[in-house]
Length: 257
Length: 247
Image 1 (cartoon, chains in turn green, red):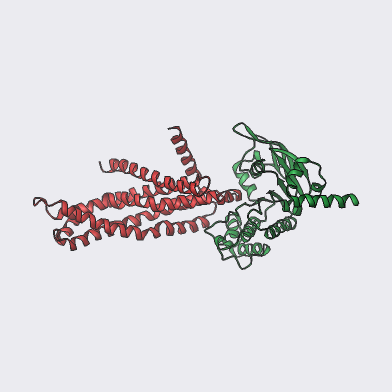
Image 2: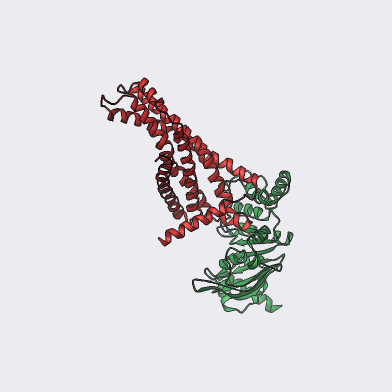
């Protein structure tokens, strides 16, 4: 579990995050949503320790990230996996070498065991047989899956995903969403996803935090989104006609019950 | 001035981060071998080609410009050797390598920066500067003496070839000039200079690549800046070392 307490962050006098408190729960997919420039990315960067907040606490199962020294932070980072928007696979390495990389850097297991673990991770994301390919030789969806395999190779407690569906078609997006959701429950990880994708919100939003202009505007689950009367949230989530109609149908069904 | 000092401070901090004990020696040696192959071995062909041609041109130019009967013909071989040993194979060759190797390093690390590959390493808890920069610096410093020796040898071979095709430059006189008043210290001096240049090329290019921000255009800018700055630093180091070791 990750707990944020009164996080405030400013850049050159401009407050980007203002007194945000929330909890990212274990075994659940926790989504941070909000418009571009609302402070989502800054929030995630604070949570993973790439940026230090001006005020507040970030607790990883009770351990305060802000008070950690460099060594402690490095140790904590070995418990983290991260899926970047552009996958961030190492170009000079094959898919298998990418997945092996964290294991080679930090695992004390034998080479044979590391290879076995890497192959297991590739199998888990349905990339068996693609290990010999370079990132430039595979599709966007495969790159995301390879990046997920790399992120889970060290069996992390915390998984962070930055726009996991950007640049993917709707079908592949669903596959990636389901994969993230499944591995979160399977390995009981605390997963934090920064997304714009409303399909993801409705598909895997176990817990949703809506950020507006650096302030936490709303918090709830995907079921609560439908019933929410928060105007800003409704404007954002149900911006398209399709989603507005879906909401109307869902609300009618809810009333008839 | 303030901006330059700021950049110098950033460079020192980055080197402090990069030059530390590697997280995993096995990974360091794996990277080191890759870098020696990529930065050093792959540069051999260009070093050989340039050295042969420049050696040839130096010998021909000197033979054409020294036409006085008062100056013995062996002076051409002697001068060619001195130019190649003292300046060409170390300083000029390293200026050329600053273009080839420096831009390679800056663009590679810069691309990794803008595509979040370096962030990915940092999130994993890897000292990205140490993992990426140290093998390049050590690899180039280890291999540059080989490049310099190849350059010296092939440059002199080039001069010798010139003596075979130039009527005003007898081969026997050229051979005599090559051996005349030979000072082996110059070879060591040249190699020592090149090792320092190797550090300049690899570290300056790494600095510009590591601090690249934005997109492809910024990676290109970082690459250009790396070549320009490392060339200036090489020339400055050349003056200082020549003054310290030869004057």
